[in-house]
Image 1 (cartoon, rainbow, N blue to C red):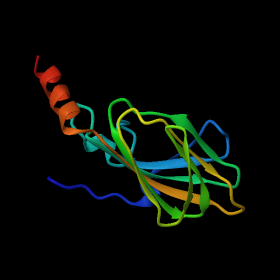
Image 2: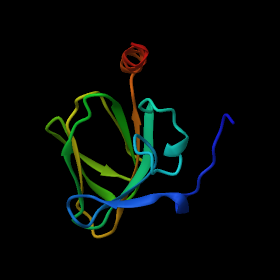
Image 3: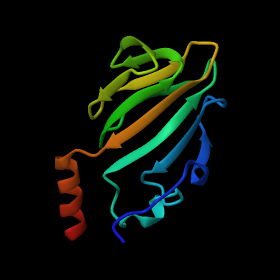
Length: 135
């Protein structure tokens, strides 16, 4: 089969270290994700899911040395910090982070903040992974 179908209800909710924010990923490196079990044994070329931050919630500063990432704010308002620059964010904002760009998202509003995220492994990294698995 060349396609798979999943629903939001199939996702696994995980808690962020802040103890109040959550993430639901549909596909990524974890085999327990709804579409993860169908991935080849090599690392996937992308990840996808939604992070939900209640008031005061935070996705702590982090970077991905092996992939680029895209955030799209679905709902709410907050502050996004990317490589030290603060960006006010609200529904409809899209931000791309290159490999190694440190980023953090904080919900500064009184309502929830929902962020769709997509992680993409660049072609050069994917090609290197493929070469490494062949040797």
